[in-house]
Length: 383
Image (cartoon, rainbow, N blue to C red; front, side, top):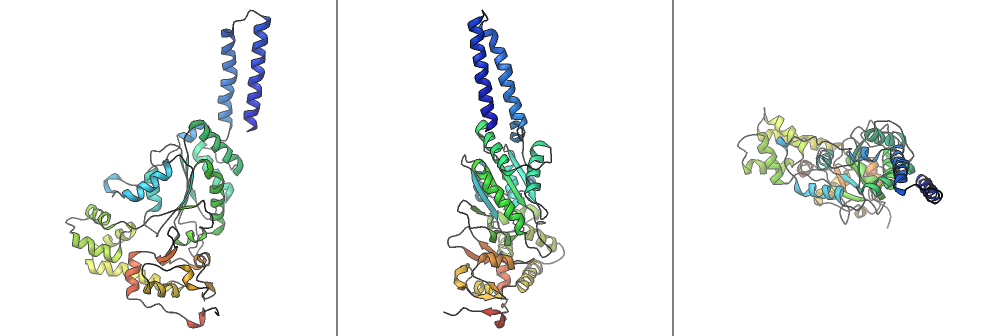
């Protein structure tokens, strides 16, 4: 703000000089106006260029959709939610989450394509606050330099006030942002959250978390808004299958949807298998992989509860029970315990919040799977 204070002082000084010139000479005011404009309009342009970024540079920042229109199946509900998030004049702070492979990053970038002042900041495990701000600056200015968080906040606020454009910053926490066991690093998420909280008063901050366990670290800030990207609906799944194979009947699509659901990556795996196997064999192979993930899931009591209550269970229903030292009623502790093969998702967007099976294929696998609970590892608090 000191830049604008100095600018006002400079303009005031020039006005005084103009008045004195008019008083002591026959100079016409119209002769002095070009000098005034050259000095101060030129100074304004210099100020805009000498800040962290030129306003036009941020306005021109855009993202490209990774989706080919030839193979795209429209998802109007989630597209509408994401579009509103990025276009409403009110600033926002949103977390986009869902099962692995459901298309979270793809959907966000597809909706953001063509919008002005959109910056995607890819986040990896090696990143910290300096590298995150440097990535933002590189996308906008071409210069890879870290900046102070407060200075960045002020620059974005000035941009929004000057252009009346609400920028969107997409913090895309990539699947590579994990340790060797598959858990997203807490320190990376903490830096991203801190920056989003600082900036969101003057822009749209969208955090896309790729790992299902990452969302367990959120939910303690009332400003956070959660957007759950679900599997495709039956109609969307059927349309996707029709784009890939000929003569798809509703019965065929329903059998696929009811057993393995509408996750894009899973459907692609299914179609690859279908080239050499029957539909039943292909479905069994997909469900078999999900069963392996159930077997590898550490917190078997949660699976047992979900087998009895397929629509979901509240964390509080475990009433401080611990399994292998993990408090099952504490989502943050449960998230820490979820390793590479996650089987559940935390529906932090619902009221009440629920643990649910991560996907349709996991639900199918759970029907024939009996969770194995080591009673010695289960600790029930005394009432």
